[in-house]
Length: 136
Image (cartoon, rainbow, N blue to C red; front, side, top):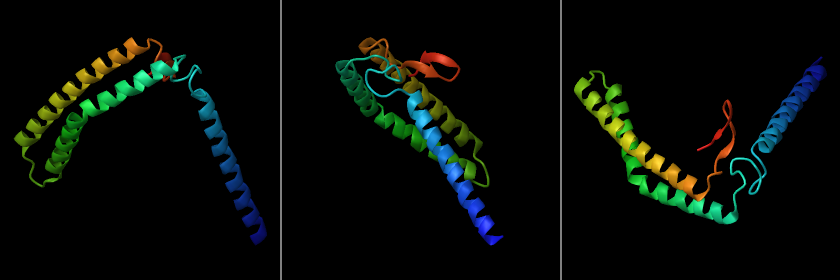
């Protein structure tokens, strides 16, 4: 009986491992095989990919302080909600600041997406939630 339980446990572990491995391979195939394949990158050239990566670096650097400010304000807001006695005015003011910062970030992100589209109109074209879309 003890040997049967051990055998069943090993078989179950092996079956689960095979299922997870199969999922990993299926997931890899879903997203294309790299440059030149029609996956996340579409059919873009190496030059376009280099320009896209450079633009991403610029965007990441340009929004660094803004992202840090959003993070800090969200932490302050969490701290306010952790208090026993809530300071409603402070909470409202922090949320207003967070909304303003998010709006600034969203505008910069839209400008970034436009620049990416100017580099390569096919960038990000692929399958996603609900079917075919531009995967920004």
